[in-house]
Length: 434
Figure (cartoon, rainbow, N blue to C red):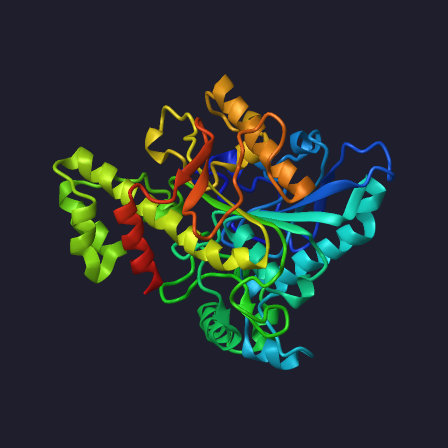
């Protein structure tokens, strides 16, 4: 159940739910290249994004046939969304044997992974080599599964796209008590003041469009209930690939309401910098100087991208202690003559990962297809070996805590510094550690 918007810039129809919505939604899709159950191929299980409020595994860009042709079994999973998937409420907690509520969408994902374990061998998949990969909210849910005792043993590797870093879009995970307070506010907004009244409402009353949660409420996502999730940070010791795209949501552009991003100007630059630098704005303005509107916009984009990459670097330092980690920065803008200002927008890497450029109505070039072939090969290589490297690909170095670099994926493939200068790196390391 969700509000079908069909099209909301920069996400055109291929990125948005088009099929019918229903409470009867717990389906998954499988693509396999296997000729029989004897092949035991690696499995990639996809968790779609959409703020845990919208999206579908049937969206056109998630077509798994081209990934499967690279020798993996691809599974795309549906899970309950919005209030029906993530509403915590005191009366629901009280009736739970585990004293838990609000993590129903996560339980759906766990149930799907258990189903894959039981059944994927019949499709030529190896249940011992499952990679969970997700983008945006799906990436946040992936890290939640990595922090969940119930997720233990269900997957061997993980990929998080635009979801794990100190300055990224995925919101802080609330405690169960905090989530219950939000749930009571949400129920009151629906006109319900008891569990009986909530259950009497039709399912369509529970859904709101993306960004339609009233001010003061945080939106939907997993909470730390001490049953499904017991800690903030992932604890699973699995190989992990984690990264972002150049114009991800953390750069402060309000994609959620479909607004065309306005360039920074000299008049707006200082206010924007204050929003990300706080009391240290004077240092920021010195590190990212501007003289005119064009320089102001370039300085702003450089600053927020430095901040985001350093945030991923800091997050990765801690996570790399639990297993091999590979970080990336995807910066290929979709060719879009009508809206060039969207650039490499949030989710724009997904058609390259799935090798589904054909699903998106853009004037893609041979270079775009080449990038897609390389990126999808990195992803399937990681699913196969826990290491993205393979024959014919530019070497992707494993993350090392004392080496602040990340892998650039785009027209250029190769390692780059996580910040645009050593002085800027030192600033963001200090600022984000506070």
